[in-house]
Amino acid sequence: MADSIETTAKALIAAGRDRAAVAPVGAGFGDNADVDTAYAVQEAVTKAAIGQGRRVVGRKIGLTSKAVQTQMGVDQPDYGMLFADMEYADGDTIPADLLIQPKVEAEIAFVLRRDLPAKDVTITELISAIDYALPAIEIVDSRIRDWKIGIFDTIADNASSGLYVLGSRPVQLADFDLRLCGMVMERMGQPVSFGVGAACMDNPLIASLWLARRMAKVGRPLMAGDVILSGALGPMVAAHPGDTFRVSINGLGEVTTHFAKGENA
Amino acid sequence: MTNTLSAIAKRLDDATRSATATHQLPDDQQVDAATGYAIQAMGIELRQQRGERIVGVKMGLTSRAKMEQVGVDEVTWGRLTDAMRREEGGTLVRADFIHPRAEPEIAFILGRRLTGEVSMAEAALAIEGVAPAIEIIDSRYENFKFSLGDVVADNSSSAAFFIGPLARPDLDIANLGMVLSIDGKPREVGSSAAILGHPLRALVAAARMTARAGHVLEQGDIVLAGAATAAVPLTPGMQVEVEVQDVGRVRFDVS
Image 1 (cartoon, each protein chain N blue to C red):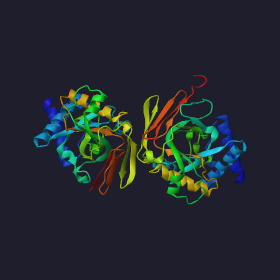
Image 2: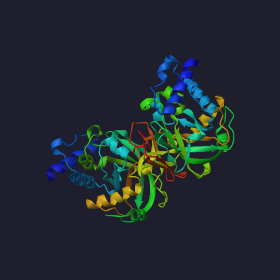
Image 3: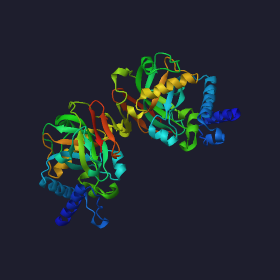
Image 4: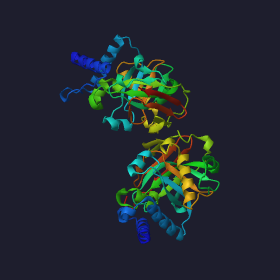
């Protein structure tokens, strides 16, 4: 079992490095393909990344919409690690050779000013710990071929994390409506995805509270300065070389990203 | 031809009043949108003969989600009468309808006449207020299946509507979060941006399309801008609520 966890972690790391997706990894675990084992694989991938000098700067929350949870056969979200080298600034161009099969999602990012070490952290402690919010584009990617993922695959694969882009104007929680903020994502100027704060577990703070408690329990508590990508506000959209995406979240602001054209384009 | 059209209008009116679905126009009798609007006008005349009064218009199929749900790819409009208006916070009787669905909308109340080709700025200036709204659509056709001509003839499926409290007219309505909840839990979520990219475009389209049919949007008229999400089928016992960011909420119960 420990062997297969290590082997699977290595296969996922190689798939990401070589940009060569692999077959679903859950199948190899048979009856042991549960959520805990999937997180054990993710933890092995995380340890290897830290060993290479990569720095954890936050977490992402995935599977925050009811529709996606139903599709995956689960009743809770999942999480993945955000590393410093995954972050891009508003307006940056994403190099063509970093991702396998990217998709984009519009999200609210929170940045913390305090550690949240308690396993029973409360909503007021969380609100007090949030320094500010930013509009964000999460660029998800899967090391599993054709996105043929089950719950085990996506958790093992760092919750299908890729890269992320953050806006540059911090906004206080009191200054926008977290639950009813409208979201529109445009691709090349055409609206392609719509949503609202409530699409993320009824309120992005509910998702973030789940994350804070969960991270304290597994021994990787959220720390001051950490970024939380709280979950998609609308349907994800496939990204192609040359695409430009702009996300507007009402009251929170806008964030834009460009995908570089491929070498042959 | 006129006889045939008025017979179709009568059949749809009977279907509405008896809450019984009727068949689509057969393939060899399909009508285009213009003929559909002529049938719609005849159907409204039947309502007016019974004392109903026109209070505004609804725009239909203004979002991609809605177009995909019904398989039609053109914006439509229909007429609203006072008999279709329901009291906010009140009860909708399921049995009065065939297969009703609720959709979250934004309503404009016009402060002045608006007709023909108008700019977005002119449309904005004609708005007296903006309100959260729920439209009840209820296709008179079996299985909610229709062509463009069919649905237009059927008053664009409009059946009833609820309007919430008026918000100020100068709100930026381009990207308002919208949530339709059933029994307190969000069921359909979206943004007003899903309405043609900006709900004001629906008002511009309303002025243009109604003028083409000789209909004028008057001061005091209600314009339902179209749905921001897919519609939700209604069953007795449901509590339905729509919230619109910065605008407000509107609700009703189904019995």
